[in-house]
Image (cartoon, rainbow, N blue to C red; front, side, top):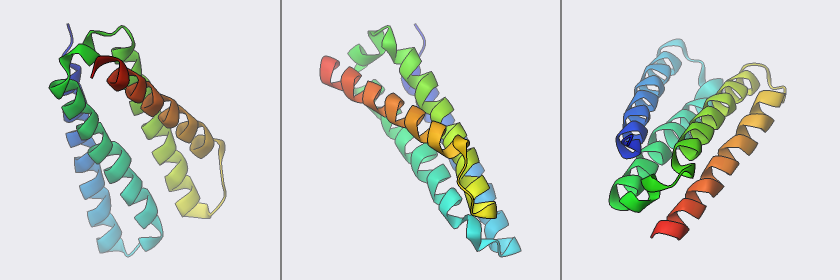
Length: 121
């Protein structure tokens, strides 16, 4: 069985590294129009992914569900698409389908987490 808790925490640490590098670039280049993207990278990428990993660690029955790996994939793909869309908006101020699709996919992944938690906890 895959260690979904470890996978989530590992990808959360990748997200925080990306967020830190992006944040350093923001400060060094004075591109503060991307501050909102930076926040989404750190909150949805690092914080939520790490919390989901802790949930899977604390409630191992959640990882036994056939939905668990799908939940992981859907959530992380959604966040990546959402962040791309957010960066595009922060760059040119125009809404785009990446943000809309990423937001919906991320919400679906989060709803799946709620279902898994409610079923196993």
